[in-house]
Image (cartoon, rainbow, N blue to C red):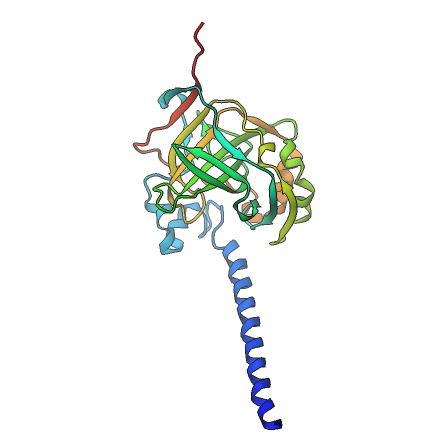
Length: 279
């Protein structure tokens, strides 16, 4: 019996070592991932080089439908509509994560509701912030941009991601961001995730009924194309302190985490307006 227990002990020890090694490996990959790209203009990992860093990031360099873009009022196609954005959001448990290059708010278990775009439903997955804004309007860059990222519930969908972008200028504090700012501040320079309880996406002010829409890409690697963008035309406000908290929380290389503007090429940008009511 004594001789039999030794192999069992060795086997258990090996399993323990393998599990620990796997845990360390996963952690190392996660930390490394946060530093695989940055926003420096002259650095080897800056936006100009994203497409060269990995083969699967090639769209960042060769793509023809990249984001962000400048939305010039004079070249948009105006569409009148009698419908608001069809969103069906609901309160849901969420976590706040410092990803090094941004702060991300993720709703859990796909229970935060849906957004309908072009007849298809997309589930709200997460939101994150960029400062300054990535998209511009008539060449004007704003102080902050919030992205609400949704994924398709149809596995056969051509466009699997749709994003709502909200632009902010310096002014009164953003009430939604105020709910999270203490947690964001406490996560400065820490790659960690915190439970923030139930967060209602409806508390995000989506403004009026005017919005731009175009087809683009993710604005971070792998710069996947086929993303349907909806940029709210109304500009909201955010305080200097809130922007400072977001910038202080992320790593130094991402304090200003906006990708440069990309060529529009032959894409069409639509501007949706409320349909005029008859007199």
